[in-house]
Image (cartoon, rainbow, N blue to C red; front, side):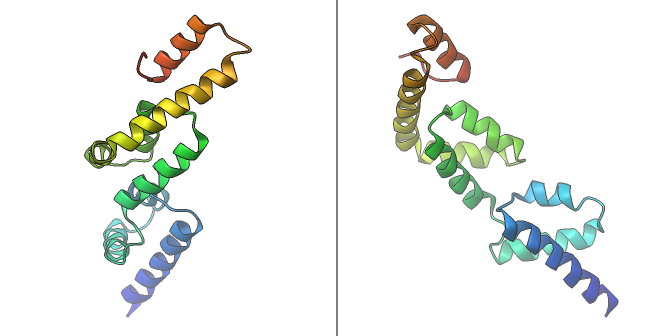
Length: 138
């Protein structure tokens, strides 16, 4: 009986954490590192089954948000997702299956950056800046 109460308490805490803002599985693990790890594992599995924690959906949502900013290359998007503790293969699968859309986004993003930087940098500096950020040299 006590285990069930503790499980429910932890599940409620985790649920509040992920409902406030979408979180990755790794972010949940880091936040609740001081909790009973066996119980946390059960809570995470339960929330994954209920689709409250879904790293694939997190990637899709995060990429859409990043795309709205129009200032990141695909490489930068990848690094941001990796920093959230997401599995590299999940990220690569998403990029591969959405390659056409992401290439189009990257072109628009590069143009957006060029427009913003044209008053402060010359063409060569802008090209160098874009290459450094991971854009293709076009």
